[in-house]
Length: 408
Image (cartoon, rainbow, N blue to C red; front, side):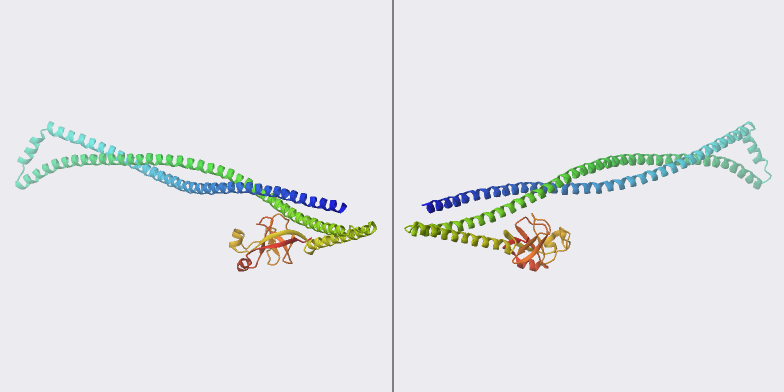
């Protein structure tokens, strides 16, 4: 009767443990799921921020290129203004020279005009016409007459030519003055236009410079958010690794406990069956038999303990059945870190280096009877990435699920 009660008690303990352990495991799994969801949200935010950073970098680069172009335009306009100023100064010098020539021509014109007026007045007052007539009539012969007539004609022609020459000179100088003034005015207009363009370019330069400052401030803010998100994701990954490790440990502990309790229940059941068969024997025989059963139960428990201890110690601490993949140092596997060292600073070596998160660098893991060292990151706890010497070897290894032990 006592044996039946004992057997019933053991069964109730096993059932209670079976009902409690899945709930505990489910709680840890729920934490893992929540952590993964939060990490996925932050990862999505990080990608959005990265897109924003890329877009801002693109806009900033375009603005900087435009700013360089505007700066070149300002330099060209400054040279143009300098050339126009030089041309204007040259035209001013020409104008002053022309105006001086015009003044001198007008003075000569006035002097010639005054001289002609005096000569005409003298000729009129002294009856020059009669003198010219008397000069012709008193000629000794036809040859002298013609010479005196030619002289009179030359004097008149000279007076007219000199007057016309000075009048032409004045007209030419006045025309030249007008042309220089016109060219000077054109240069002044070009100066105003160049100055207006320079002001417009300077305004665009200032606006573009302010635009670049705005982009820089936005970039700084986005990069700060990026750093915060990366830190959060790394912290969440560490927490996730701890939760996965905890779940693995709970799974192993629950499995061992279930095995031990199943073994104990089997031993108790066997003892109860033997006790029921010999229930008709004498109390002394029953006592002896009970003692024998207790020894057997202890022996069975000891054997189970030895088996469990052997499982734990044969390859170190059992961590669970992990996913094992392969990678190498090529750009396909490592991207921008191709050909470099590991995250721990060592040189990756085939047959030694593995990558896994959630454990310190230098942790020894036994996989298929061979000991590897965690020297790199890139995978979460429960996923081991094994280093190979070539990409073909890593591909050939593929993806496998293998029991992993942590070597003490």
